[in-house]
Structures are given as structure tokens and as C-alpha cells.
Image (cartoon, rainbow, N blue to C red):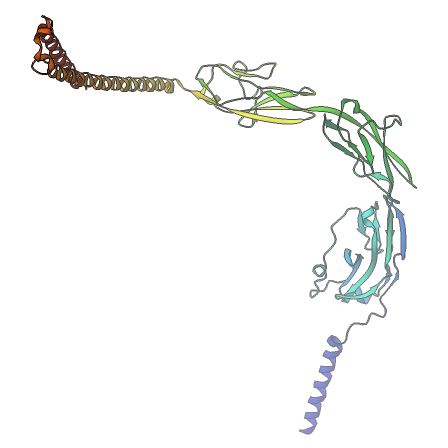
Length: 432
């Protein structure tokens, strides 16, 4: 019984040792190495080809049993990598580090491990290192090599011809790059001095006030120890297009009538004029040539107008100096709407006449009442001045003979006038 127990203990210890040796002991990378890597300092001209070596020593046993990755790094970031051995299902090496963006100029040769550049750019300058990664652990690394790129002398960007607006402040830039940094200057045509009001500040032409005399050819020259390059541009002086007669509206036109939309422009060079309807340019494919006519001065004429012609018409004036656009609304009145409009106008006229008639009658009524009241007042005054009252009654001998008769006639006349006024007032009341 004691013997069986010892045997069981011995077997357990052996199994534990086996597990520990296989999984707890880290892999030994003594026979893994990079025998040749990039040089510590590399200098090359831009647009040249380049190959960075990465020769390694690795047994076939590692390649068959482990995940082996050859990796190139630039400035401590993974640039390119390739699988050499069996990929382990437990590794996530491609997801551990962010790869630099793909570039067809740069490739990694799996057989030799070298990193190749078809055409070196200034942006390729940096620190490069080659590594062997086994089961997610860095087994060997090369010496870091610093790549220095001699940037080719060039314009960035290339200078181009420009149109400068008359009377404005304008600038024309010229920038160059290279190793060492180049000097940049401007000249006019065949080494002539720059014209008045034009200065050169570190490769930038400044026109303080553009004039017609400043037209011409200007050359930008960049130079350094690599040599000299130049670029010639044309400077044109223009006047931005402006509307001399802009389209004005809205414009209302009767169906089957004629619509005339004006649009004229000025500028240097002479601007062109294009019309559009609801932001769609008018051309022979979408217009009726018999009805639509574009005159020489830019005016658009539409004959025999139809309901579908209604919309916003835009006039665009443009030249090398710029573009401008204004639009106007065209409203088409149909025949039915026109007849309705006439009826509406007649009704409005009738209502206005009725209102004026009412005001006139009301005024007459007020006037008649005023006249009647005035007649009554005069009648009452006549009674007061009769012969039965007043100091004149005491001296009848002094009165003319026809005084009483005249007084009686006056009273009768006033009574008759008062009666007429009352009748007229009654007639006015009846009319109202």
C-alpha cells in the first residue's frame, strides 16, 4: 500500500514538471538573430530608389512550430510586416499596432526581408528598424538606421498665371522647396525691374494698386546649391463683370402674350450672358427656338407665353474676372384668371360708385336740414320785427305807406321758402 502511494506521488510530480517545462518556461531566442540591418545613417536624393536590408538567422524548427513575423518599423510605428512561419491562433499581432497607410512605392520582400522604395520622397525621412517577432514577443531587432532625404529643388505649388482686378490690392505667390532651403525672387520679362507699386517680399509679388501698366510676363527664380529653376507667369488686368441693366421683377404677362426680361452687363474682358430657368440653363434642347430669343444685348424675349413658362429666370454674367447672377420671377396670367380679374375690377368700381353716391346723398341731407333751420330762424326774426312791437309802432306817421304791404310780402315769401325747404328735406330723407 505504501509502495503504490509513492508511485502515484512520483507520477504526479513528473506530470507537473512536464506541464511546467512546456508552458511556464519562456522560449529561448539564442539562435534567432538579425545578421544585417540598415545602416545607422543613410542619405539619398529625392525620387531615387532605395533598399534597406534585413538578413536574419532562424532555424526551420521555429518556422514550423511557431508564429514568426518579420516587421519593419518607422519612427516606432509599424510600416510593413509579413508572416514567415506558422500563424498561431492565439496571437493578435496585426491588431496590436496600427499599420502606417499603404503606399505602392514601398514594399517588403518576404524572401530577403528587405524594404524597398521605388521612388523616395521627402516624407520618407525618419528612423527605420527591422524586427523578428515570435509568438508575439520581439525575438531580435536590428540597429536603427536614420534615413535623410535630400529634397529636390522644386516649386510647391507651381506658379500659375493670374487675373488681377483693376484698382485692387493683389498678391502672387511663389514658393519653392529643397535641401538646403532655396532663395526665391521675381523679375519682369527679360530681367527688367519691377514696375511701380509692385514689390517682392520673400517670393510674394505685392501689387498695392493694380493698373493696366502692370500687365505682362513675370518670372519666379528659385536657387540653392543644387542649381536654379524658374517659372514664368502672365499677369492680366481685368474688370469684374457688373450689371448695367439687371433683371427686375416680378414680371406679369398674359398667356399668349410676350415677356421681355432685360439683362445687360459691362466688364473687361466683355462678359458673356447666360440665362437659366429654375437653375437649369436654357439651350436648344429645352427651349422652343421659335418662342425664345436671346438678343445681342442680353435681353431674353419669350413670345406666345404659356403657363409652363412661369418660374424664376436667372441671368448669369461671367468672364475670366468672375461670375455674377441675379434672377427674376415670371408670372403667367391665364385667360380665365384675366376674365375673373375684369369681373373683380367691375365689382370694385360699382362698390366705389355706390359709396360715393351714399356720401353725396348724406351731404345733401345735411345741407337741406341746415337750410331749413336757417329759414326757421329767419322766419322767427320776421315775427319779432312785426308792426305790433317795437318803437316804430308809436310813430306810424313816420313809416312809409307801403311798409305793411312789404312786410306782409316778406313774411309770405319766407313762409313759402320754409315750406319748400321742408319738402326738399323730406325728399332727401326718403332717398336716404
